Amino acid sequence: MKTAIGTLLLLCLATSAVADTPPIGFHTTTLPDPQNERPLEMVVWYPSTTTATAQLIADNPVFVGALAVRDAPVAAGEHPLVVISHGFRGNWGNQVWLASALAHKGYIVAAVNHPGTTSKDTNPQAAAQLWQRPADLSRAIDAVLAQPQQFGAVAKGQIAVVGHSLGGWTALEIAGARFDPERFDQDCKVHTKLASCSVYQQINPASTPAAKARLAADLRDERVTSIVSLDLGQSRGMTDASLAAFPVPTLVIAAGVPSADLPAELESADLARRLPKASNRYVEISDASHFSFMAVCKPGAVALIEEASPGDGMICADGDGGRSRELIQQQVTTLISEFLGPPLITTQR
Image (cartoon, rainbow, N blue to C red):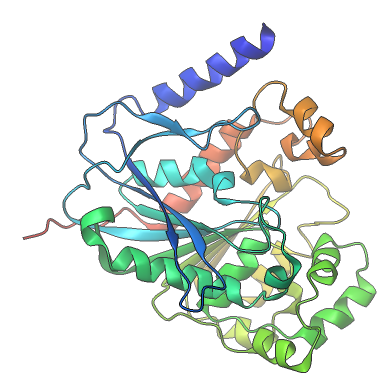
């Protein structure tokens, strides 16, 4: 009974938060790969003027979803585009709270499931192709730009990338950072407890000279004009030179809850110190954990997760005695909205 009441309360909160705004549209598709080797599941949230009844998207027994109308007619005008990259063993549903909030503010928001590193696809060969993650986001940008009638027209010069955890590394790469596998290998011999090192060793993306060269290559997409990193990992492998000359504004948000394997000081704060001071902002949220940037957990979620995967119930944990995940995410949404600036929506003629 308590679980049912708690779930109903969360649904009511989600509904009331957007009750005074028009529903947003939602579309899901699969982007084919020319060589049929890396099809991408992509979802897009977008502004709409529909009056249809919204339904919960990405809602399941563990996580709270968000309201949208599938394949709703798109709102007129040009809108900024935000592309979201999930973390290791995550999926596009992890940041449904952010995608929904930004779409309600006037952004087109796209997200993909990165093959090999999602909760539903852990193929080791696909996971090892870490350099494909930025390319996945470029493919999503291509797809949205090519379909203005479906998703809305993208405002020129307004394409941002937001990434959580390994997605933060992906955002840096697509915006111009360069990764040095040798540097990261040496760093991991010193900082052996970092989760970013264990994930990297598990993926093993630099197992051959050819793979190492692809990982160290320039993976920039010059259409990306700003990025947001949410408690990222692996940035210690980025070269000092590429970060010092980083070409786009960057918002680095860190989880401030003490963590032995994802300490802010060695991850996000270290990144921010090496980025240009004039174009980057660093914010550490004291009561946020690494998992506070994932979807809100429902009552009873921990028990369900532990039953299926013992030890993983921690993904529902935030700072002890701190704010709720909903309030933390409201702060994050505000920080990102202020960083990106108000959507400069122009009417199409």
